[in-house]
Length: 137
Image 1: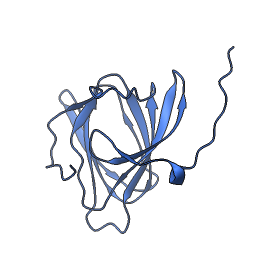
Image 2: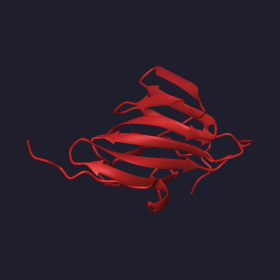
Image 3: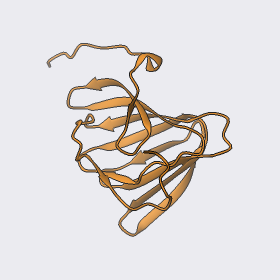
């Protein structure tokens, strides 16, 4: 078995970039071929663009703020409340959109694991129709 070096990161030290859906993302760590981890933030009152992923799926753990996540797979769709401790899945091909509560005291903060690792391809996140009007650029 080939060894991959272990790594350590601090989310506060990670560079912030804009995700394809418009949320702020701080990429953290990558395990070659297995997955990557990042922290997403959305300011109170902000709404992302609806997207689906072409090759990756995700697991989310909400660590701060409050909001809503809408997901759709074919005819099945649901909206779930997000608050610290909520854990959700975004399987491959799922259309999703999320929003932060306008009256929240802090940004909606989500730790996400992406499998396989985020590829960096601009075509990975496909724009879709969602239930809310996006507010992010």
